[in-house]
Length: 370
Ligand code: COA
Ligand code: ZN
Image (cartoon, rainbow, N blue to C red; front, side):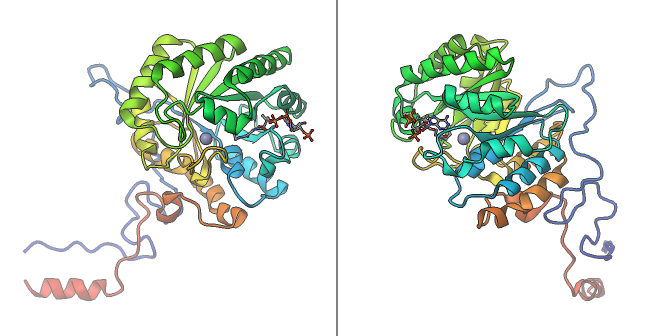
């Protein structure tokens, strides 16, 4: 008979003491930090999305903007500031802090100035803000945003619904907006909504998306562009194709992929993007998010879920998962409801549960059977 090994029973993480990465549900706490993988060796198989080897993936936090804009409840300015500060402390190197849009369009972010002015700025962290027009740029620059994230849509219908302009008008507004940023020496990124499909028009052909990318980059001189899957229509093979096409055509432009988890394909899309060469991803703490002017929009991919998965696969995200989960744990009280994050409920994959109360009895009984 094979001996049944007796696990240690010393508390809620019984049996866990010798395992790396052990943590309570809701805590990250791996002692052997996932992501700190051995460097690649000569003769190794080629790197894939499933084998990070300690390489960096940039996670860019959009929860304070994409997340809170979608909420019914206005989150107090002080709470927004505390959230951004907590995300800075968790190691997110770029944080979209708010948007400088019309307060009628997005009343939840009407306190953008106050938030930008009063956050604690960590050296090295880029604090960006979304702006749709020159008026937004003036406000954002006055509030010392480090980067302006300009926005327009690859879909004519969504552009009109969201920004109340034709795409041509948006492009002209973006050019003027970018000129203001350039004059102030501030970096510009363009986010192209509905790059993987429009909830009202359906497919947006890849060639049309790439043409809009080209026009946006030419008009704005932006250093980066974000392909946004505004309502979670992207699927992995499409992501891989568009990512490769973008990188082939716009080498030198910093590409970010922005996914919403509306149909449960968020993590798969991130991995498809990595496999195709992308290394920057937007994500939202708690999995909050969504554009109020895109029918059917739901939360972004969840920052802690993506960080957890990537770190266990050997990627370096630069994120302290324990601190990130602490920030996420405060969200339900702020927004007044449960948040989508599954990691918040389950904890790190090695967050263990206690043995059954009658474990010793079960063990003795099993052993007695011989
Ligand atoms: N910041 C603050 N107020 C602004 C503004 C900005 N960037 N741009 C315009 N406004 C104000 C105007 O001053 C005007 O105010 P008033 O009614 O008190 O005079 C009002 O908004 C309407 O201005 P107008 O230029 O006619 O804008 P519009 O009604 O055509 O709307 C946008 C255009 C872009 C301002 C608006 O659609 C918007 O803010 N959209 C953003 C939506 C969004 O953030 N979606 C989610 C992120 S993708
Ligand atoms: Zn979004």
